[in-house]
Image 1 (cartoon, rainbow, N blue to C red):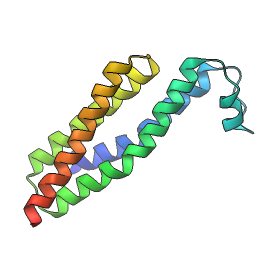
Image 2 (tube, helix red, strand yellow; image 1 turned 90 degrees about the horizontal axis):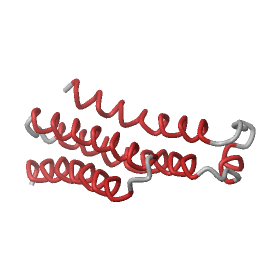
Image 3 (cartoon, rainbow, N blue to C red; image 1 turned 90 degrees about the vertical axis):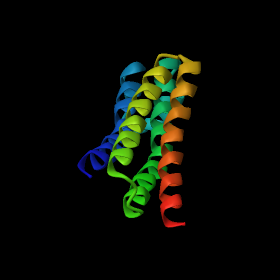
Image 4 (cartoon, rainbow, N blue to C red; image 1 turned 30 degrees about the vertical axis):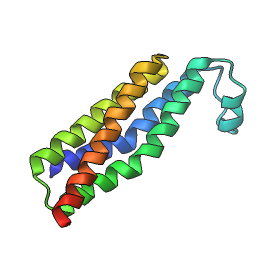
Length: 129
């Protein structure tokens, strides 16, 4: 179960990559008022990177729960692993597309990551039903 747990760790850390990009994309970063600083930025890339960060924090709980649900329900380990890897890959792509202003590809990668979460939860439910 090591790879799915590593995927949970990676998914937990991904938002920090996007916030680092947001902080580096605007004027000199002010750590005393980070939200106020971001609100004052005219740099669209900084705002998109921050949005990718927020979205990463929003999707993380469902993903972590889905992996753990699948594990506790004794879903096939290989399926859990591939879906967890798929989620992380799609979330990395989501952030890259978000920062790069590729909205259609961003939406597609978001949906595919969401599908991985739903598949994990669905398999867990099917095993215990």
